[in-house]
Amino acid sequence: MTIKKYLHSCIVIEKNGKRLLIDPGIFSFVEKKLTPKDIGAVDAILITHQHADHCSIEAIKSFLALNYAPVFTNESVGAVLSKEEIPFQKVSTRERFDVAGFTVDVLEAPHGTLPMPGVLNTAYFVDSTFLHPGDSVMVKTISRPRVLALSLTSPWLAMREAVDFAKIVNPEFVIPVHDAVFKDFFRTRIYEMCEVAFEETDIKVKNLELNEVLEI
Image 1 (cartoon, rainbow, N blue to C red):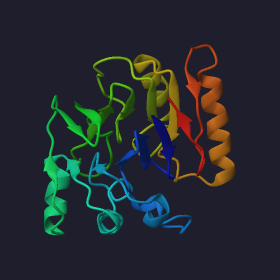
Image 2 (image 1 turned 90 degrees about the horizontal axis):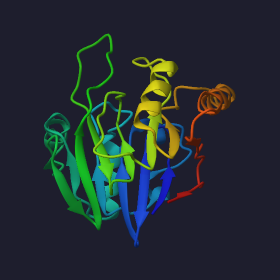
Image 3 (image 1 turned 60 degrees about the vertical axis):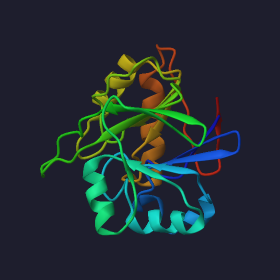
Image 4 (image 1 turned 135 degrees about the vertical axis):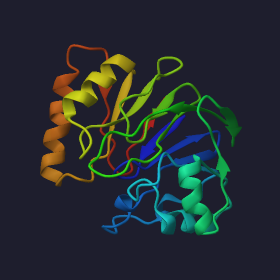
């Protein structure tokens, strides 16, 4: 299994020639550093929640134009997709399904509190190995993930909360995500702080830049 990060919270997991895409949001494409064509065709798409930085309708349509890929998401996102005539398969908490050679567990993951109406957020645990919690630090995993996509800070999160969450989940690797809100120079500083925060643990921080790969 290989894991690539395509800016912010967009992740591609590849195994046996099949590719699973999670959260293609607008922050991955708004600066024109890459396009869906640069990421390439995928075999399935998972969406954690409806916020545009995780769910870009334009990007999803672009991926579906490259190759048909089933879209899996919760009912809240599904309502948005239906308005755009994008087919989807609804998932529910505690459900397990198989797609493109991957096994995905659907976990409850309340979105962090924002000063606006909340949305339904869903976490995905892929092959009991990789956990993408979306915008949440309140996920109870089935077992210890080897890799956690960890939001470091945002309007709904303080970095200390993110670190405490990661220490509870106790993955082998943390991939920092939700970081398009930072200028590059400050993002580097945040990564350094993250590494310091986990110095006395067994958790390794893997900062995936474009074209970098974590192989598990």
